[in-house]
Length: 155
Image 1 (cartoon, rainbow, N blue to C red):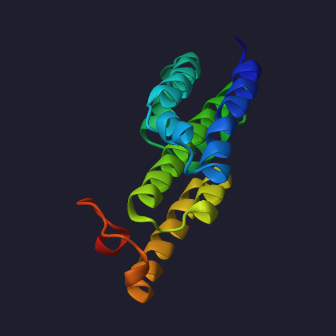
Image 2: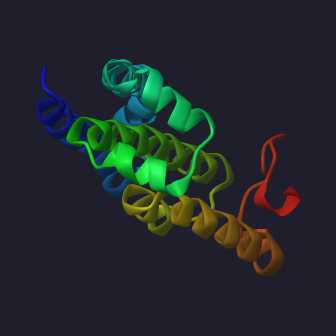
Image 3: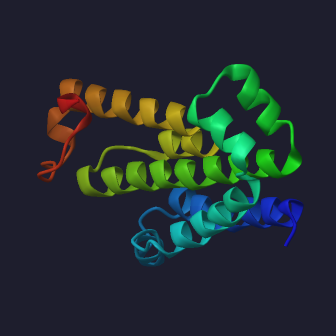
């Protein structure tokens, strides 16, 4: 497979998972699918395949002691850009899944944060942390007891 094909496949592959979390969050199938690590194994394997094709002595040195100009040169190559993009897809989906499960466990509203994770993972994470804090601070009686995990308020 070429980097272009992997890029296209990975983009399409993650969309059903986002659709399930956003549009059908309480469906039993969504819970079962999002409880699996298989989607991450598949996309992370694509990432590993792309990464191993991109790493050579020069790129390994540049990435080991990164400078912005070196990173920009590295990502100027289409294969390297595809590698970086698949990296984003894997991690954004993982963060989105974490936000999804936090919402399932605590009853805190997460649709907006999951949608933000789809487009910009760190913003979705920040949105969820803020939403969790606001919900716990101002509406403590509207959410069930949180399980014994780290909450946004504890961070």
